[in-house]
Length: 205
Image 1 (tube, helix red, strand yellow):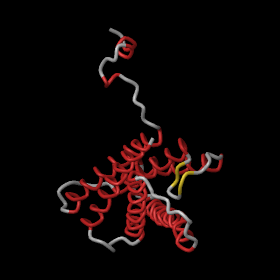
Image 2 (image 1 turned 120 degrees about the horizontal axis):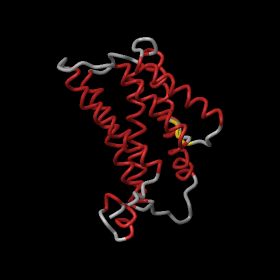
Image 3 (image 1 turned 90 degrees about the vertical axis):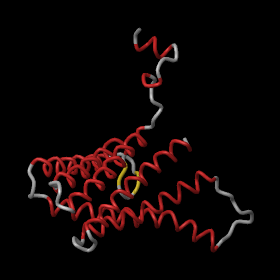
Image 4 (image 1 turned 30 degrees about the horizontal axis):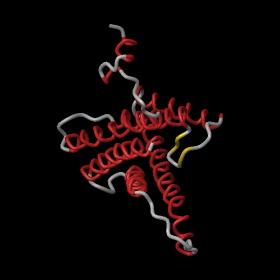
């Protein structure tokens, strides 16, 4: 039986085409990566397993570059995939790959870059989200608009995710500000929130 036969007759669900948007398909591995990374940081802080900060930072930067190149997705929101954004994505990918292969040379630069991007991205997205809310509070509509439960969950998840992103960026810019176990918990929470976000987006779609 060919794969075409399996598809035409219903077959196993594992052989059917996955109706998964590319944007969600990219969010899921990032969430899994962050959860795994955060869990690994707990034994790393205890000194039981070795750790490569260059590999961590390089991998995060490469994933960010893939999101830019494929979707125009940046830490500060989604933008049109202009040639400028493509070039920035290629530069980020090159820096991340170089950091994974040759440790020690770009560690400080990538750490500073990721810290600033996480802080700026979280702050910009929070501002964009709450400015309309402030406008509605000052100029309330004649009839209040009730938000669907899924949309409320989406807004709450995105808000917490932005706050966690800012916190993560601060810890990268100021090493030693928080204990290693706290940073590991922040990374795990970030990953779990991304997975929750992906599940909500699939329900809304």
